[in-house]
Image (cartoon, rainbow, N blue to C red; front, side, top):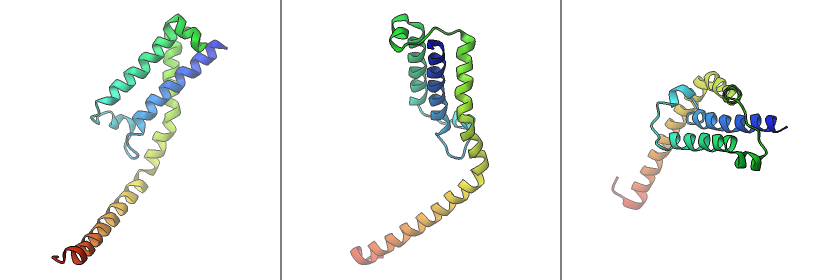
Length: 130
């Protein structure tokens, strides 16, 4: 029971790490978002992984969470399980990429048009200088 709980707990932590990386863009892949500059992401990942390893490796913490000590190959399995849980989102990004880009282009054009209309209304009514 403790072994299964450890595998599930570690898989959830790794899937949240991968989800954080994957959700940085709705159109670009997880691999391409790794090139984005964000100083907090490596710190958050290191903190999450460090806490996970501490909980698994330090006996009092492991007992407090009701977990078991697992081997390296089992930990790597949890990393793969975490990556698999996010892969569906990556596949939907690839599938929907043209649709999302069209929606964003339309939204940007409509937004610019709305801003131009608002600007002209404000200039004409308030400032009377445009």
